Length: 265
Image 1 (cartoon, rainbow, N blue to C red):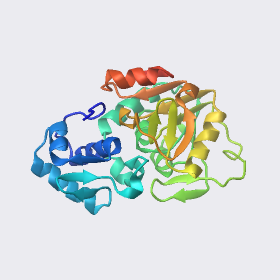
Image 2: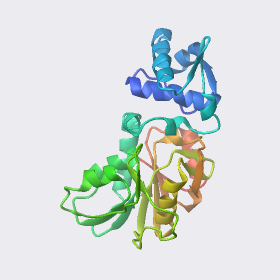
Image 3: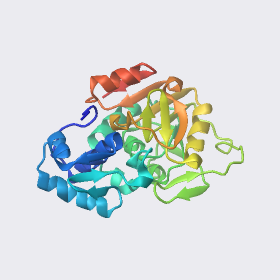
Image 4: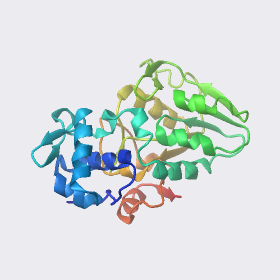
């Protein structure tokens, strides 16, 4: 079994269960023994995890292991997991990428800050100097609402209840006339040069923000590399840089570096 992006750990249950879903993303079916050997935990623990994930509809139990639900094949499982659950996955990796990205924000900047758990973490590390933030993310809005250094511009529209990100109608108005020279976005998958999101209405906002920016930054944990999702919305070659966690394996860093500058922290 290819263990490219799966590290052995016995950490938080949420991280362990996400690692199981990552294995299913890669292989579509896995055995209890394969998962146990890859993650370095007991068969009993893996069986409990599989039972919980099956109850959530994220996998199907089969004799000796598990497989992807038929409805999930060909796409990433990330969009089948609630946003609240994602906040607890790979927190250290996401925080490292968020901190590195925040260091590129300077006093007086106007930035677009998209949605997602990694960019939400970035809010805590923005400079304590006056900046302007444009966002379509309700969590980002709430996190920055009491920051006296931030002039906050919120893009309305229709809210996606799963991520609390607002999307806009297909009316060609873009970000309602707003433009930010620096844009920070995340993704649900990166495959080769291609960068993916999960919903057309949400990725349209990101595409528009990137089109109007002079500096374009992708902020992700490295677990997204090697995955496809439903909506291709940009490429790595169009990014000024990609920010990932410092413990990313060399093979993944090399794959990203073929298309854009990579910053680790």
